[in-house]
Image 1 (cartoon, rainbow, N blue to C red):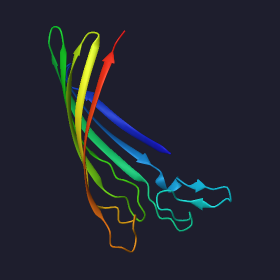
Image 2 (cartoon, rainbow, N blue to C red; image 1 turned 90 degrees about the vertical axis):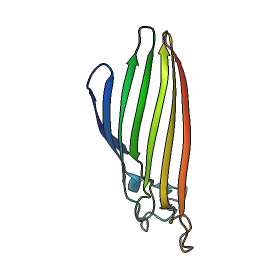
Image 3 (tube, rainbow, N blue to C red; image 1 turned 90 degrees about the horizontal axis):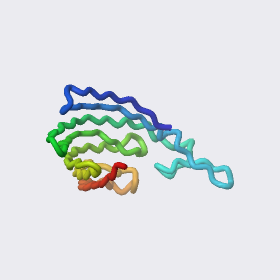
Image 4 (cartoon, helix red, strand yellow; image 1 turned 45 degrees about the horizontal axis):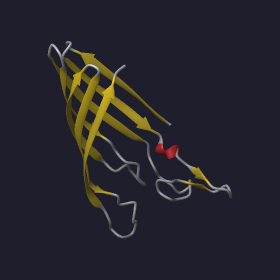
Length: 148
């Protein structure tokens, strides 16, 4: 189960800011096989031995619109905390995003860049091997919308 709450405030026609908090109950994520064995898909351990905690995601961002007579150009930015479920305690991941686009009736084009990173994460993957890793993810998102 996952649930969250968020707020957005529009200061003007041009400026909006928002924030939200989201919780996922990873400790209730259990796989039951055909023999009735219950296992945590996160840790691979039997349910009785698994110690996977829920995670809380936190996001904050803003958007400023440059409103022109025939088109609109949005400028967006945000930051987030996005932990990954893991045995013992969640792995901490953080991120930043920026984006823009253009809206000209009847089309809207958007593009965004996201940087997500985690340091010393993944220890639970190869337990007993003193393994962890630093993660740097770079992602570009794009969309085209046709309004009719």
